[in-house]
Amino acid sequence: MFAKETQSKFGCFSNIVVWVSSSRWRKASKCKHHIENLLCSIKVHRRRRETMVRQSRSDIAQLLPDGRFSEAVPKAKQFYEDERRISAYDHVEYLCTSILENFSPILCQIDVNLLPEEIKEAMAGLIFSATRIGELTELRHIRSLFFERFGREFDKDCVDLRPGNIVNSEIIKILDTRMSQEEITPEILTGISQNVTSSAESSEDSTSSDNHGNKVMKENSKFMHPNLGEANGRDR
Image 1 (spheres, rainbow, N blue to C red):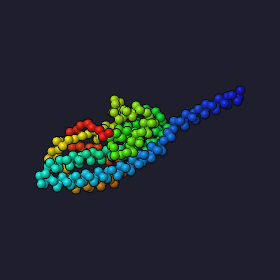
Image 2 (cartoon, rainbow, N blue to C red):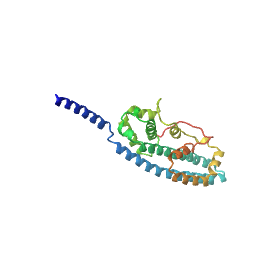
Image 3 (cartoon, rainbow, N blue to C red):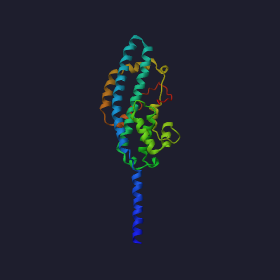
Image 4 (spheres, rainbow, N blue to C red):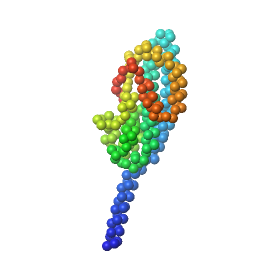
């Protein structure tokens, strides 16, 4: 009888061990690796976009004195698109950092509804961004791993912005904002051209800053202009 009781106790303990080991994410290190690679990729793409922004400012400043507004308009559109992208990079970088600093719940919890809100929102932001920032290929790998770990419904909620989704409104505004050339006025062009020097200085300060939270808050509205309209669109 003692042998049966001992066997029963050990059997229960064995079941607990099996449940814990099965819930532990075997691809956690792979996910971390992709996130770290994504952070490196963001730095490269951000530098490229910042160079393009400075070039657009310079080009516009040279075109306006000669009255070549029609040539300056598409450059202004590209200028705002590049600044919008830089803002997106900063936000994605912040989300990645949040996940890496709080990775333990993801490692052990398979039910997305039981994860801390901060982690769920960061994951949702990366999934949403994966369908709209094509040049950051690591995002697609991360989304695939989250899909495998947490299921189809969470993925669809984030991608399609279904009711009840937890994608942060700031990243939605950044990635789903569009503008047309018709909205660019001479006043907007003048404003861009007058900030050639200050833009270069602020770009250097932004690159050297390690305060991701403040950077995201600063950049979120950087690409927006009060005279520009908004429209929805996706970079799927």
